[in-house]
Image (cartoon, rainbow, N blue to C red; front, side, top):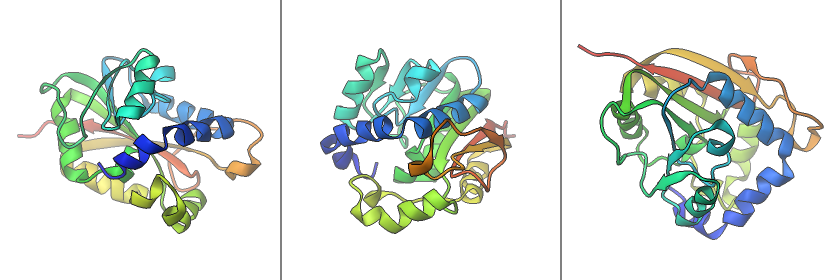
Length: 212
């Protein structure tokens, strides 16, 4: 996973972003919750547990030891590992979640195939990400070389994510979006709306399709 050392060194800076942008954070959590199914789930790239904890996800995988330590303090069982090689059995979970993890993957196709492998038939992969074509995505892309985290990131548009999901064996996609307001102008939690193309933070859910 790209940038693991940066997350280990700058975990406090990572946490500070959520403190400094509470309305953006809560907007993102609401958007993920909108498409997150019930059942047994895992967060891939659980980080410090900022999403798993409020969403009731109790298991995660994370390559950064410093980030995992904070997630464990929130009661999350965290295993060390990467998305491209998940330490779980086939057909184990009802859903898998990735939030901003896609932009740090070494091999997106392999990671999505691994997520599909550990999902039960009809299980869901839910992905939250900053849309490359949104105002925030363009700003992050422009300033990525100055960021402790995003200098190693690759940003994607919604259509690109869907192409990779389809290739990995997912279908029946659902979308929602939020962060319509610039981060430094937010005075309240932004709404969550269906679709994508307007909000800077997009959530897509794909269903594991059965293959012949």
